[in-house]
Image (cartoon, rainbow over all chains, first blue to last red; front, side, top):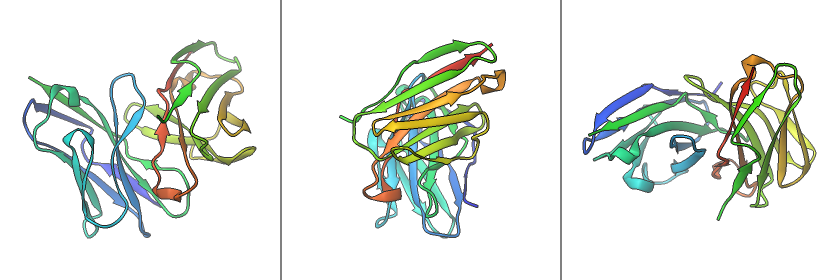
Length: 113
Length: 115
C-alpha cells in the first residue's frame, strides 16, 4: 500500500534561516507528489506539485522541492523563512489506483524572531 | 477564482444528534472529497464522490454517510454523533480532466465539537 511519511512533526527555526521539511513516500507505481500548506484556522492550499520533467519544482512564497526517485523523497526547502511561513505543511501523493490524495501526518513549521 | 465553501466554520452538537456538514464548489468539478483532520494523524479520507449520486468509501467511513444529489454539493452526514467524531472536517474538489495530476482545492474547514 502507498504511504507518505513526514519525518519531522515539528520544525522550529529562526527568521531568515533556511529550512527543509522532509517527506518520503512508498509506492510500487509512478506517483505525482504535492506539498500543501495550512495557515492557522484555514483550509489547505497548494504550494507546489511534481508531475514529471525537471526534478526541482518551484512553488509559491519562495518554496521549492526536489523529487528524488531513488530515495523516494520529495523534500521541501526555503532558503530564508519569514514569520508568516509559520503553518502546518502536508506532503501528499496521488497514486494510480485511486482518485484521492494520500497525505502525510503534517509538519508544523514555527518561525520565531 | 476557485472556491469551495463549507456551511459552518464552527459547530457544536450533542451526542446522538444527526449532523449535516455541507460543501459547495463553484468550479464544476466532478470529484469531491471529505477528510477529517486530527492532530498527529494528518488528513484521513472519509468518503469521496466522482459524480452525482456516486460515492466511494475512504479509509475511515464508519459512522458517516454522504449525499451528492447535485454536482456542486457534497454533504457529509453523521447519523448519530459521538464524542470521538469531534474533529476538523475538510471538503475538497478536483476536476476529472487530467485525473490524478490535478490539484485538489480545499474549503476552509468545519471544526465540529460533539459534547
